[in-house]
Length: 459
Image 1 (spheres, rainbow, N blue to C red):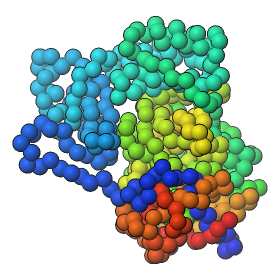
Image 2 (image 1 turned 120 degrees about the vertical axis):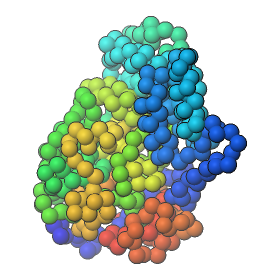
Image 3 (image 1 turned 135 degrees about the vertical axis):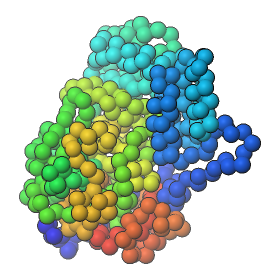
Image 4 (image 1 turned 90 degrees about the vertical axis):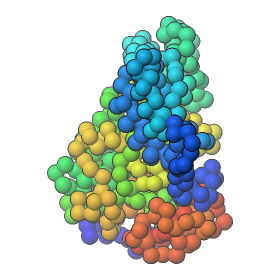
C-alpha cells in the first residue's frame, strides 16, 4: 500500500449537525410501490428518485421539443413532466408519457424560451453576486441575488428580469454572499487552502485520481492529506471559472488504491456505484470536511453563478448548506449515485443558504475519468491513506473515502441510528457491528456497517 496510516490516528464522527436527516430511515431505499393492477393504466407511478431520473431522460427523447423540463415530487414520489404545444399528433406522445408512468402537465414556457431568457440574463445581467437556474416546478427561471447586489446593480438586474416578460422569471434575495467554499485549514491541503475530496476515480491513462472543485485545482498544484504534509497528489486538469468548477487530481503514487466510497463519519462509508444526474426535487446528501453530512433538495439545473472570481455555468442549485473548507466535497444519493462536487454559494449550516454543485457526469466526460479504481470497478479498495481524506494536522484526522469529513466544527449529535437497516448502502465488505462505530444517542446520520478498511479514531 502506498501511503501508510499513522496508527495513532483516530477516526472522528463527522456528523455535522444532521438532525434534519431524520434518523435511520434515510438509508432505507424508498419502496417501489408499483401500481400494478390499477384500473387506470395512465395513472402516475410511484417511483424512487433514481428511477424517476431515468424515466425523465427517456421521456425527454420521446417528447422532443414538447418537453419543457421535469422534476421529482418527493411527497407523492412521482415524476412530473412539463409539456408545451401538445395539440394534434403530439397528444399521442403525451399519452405515451402518461402510460410510461409520468404525471404530465401543460405549461407556458418552452425549454427554448427559458434558454433564451437565460442567455439574455447572461448578456445583460452578469453581475457578481447573482445566479440563475431553471426551476421546472414553477416553469420559470429563478434568479437569486446576494447581499452585494444593491443600488444600480439591483436596478439593472430587476430591469433585465422585467424585460424578459411576465411569467418568465422571478427574483429571490439571498441572505448571504456568493463565494467559493475554500479556506485555509485542514482536510486536503494545497498552497494554504483547504478543500474536500469529492470522489475517487480512475484517470483515462489508468492512474488513480480524485475529483474536487476546480477553484481548488487552480489554487494549488499539489495537494496533501495532512496540513503541512508531503504532497500525495498533483493537479492534472482544472476548470474554473467558465464551463464548470472541477479538477482532476492524480495520486503521485501509481499503486494507490482509491476506494469508490464516501466516508460519512463515525467509521461509516457509502459505496459509490455510479455517476447520477441530478433531478429537481430529489433528495441529495453532501459530505464536506468542515461541516460533515447534510441533506437537502435539488432546486434547479444548468445554473449560472457569478462569483467574484468569474462566471461559472452548468451547475446544480440546491438548498443544502455548506461552509468554507467544504469545497469539492461529495454530493450523492442514498443509493450510491455520485451527483456533484461542492462549488460555492451563500449562507452557512446554522442559518442555511444556497449551494451550487458541479455535476459529476460533466466532470467525468470532460476529464475522461471513470468512477472507482481501475482494478476494483465500483468496489472499495484497501486504501491506506491514499485518498487525500486520510488527514492529520490540526484535526488529527484519517479516512479513505471521497468527501472524507473531519468534523472540526461538526455537531457530534449526528451519528447512526442502531435500528437502521445495516444492508442498505453500506460497504458490503464491512465486518464491524452495524450498531457500533457511532454515537448511539444521535439521530440523523446514515446507518451502515463499518468498513474493515477504516480504522476507528477520535479527536
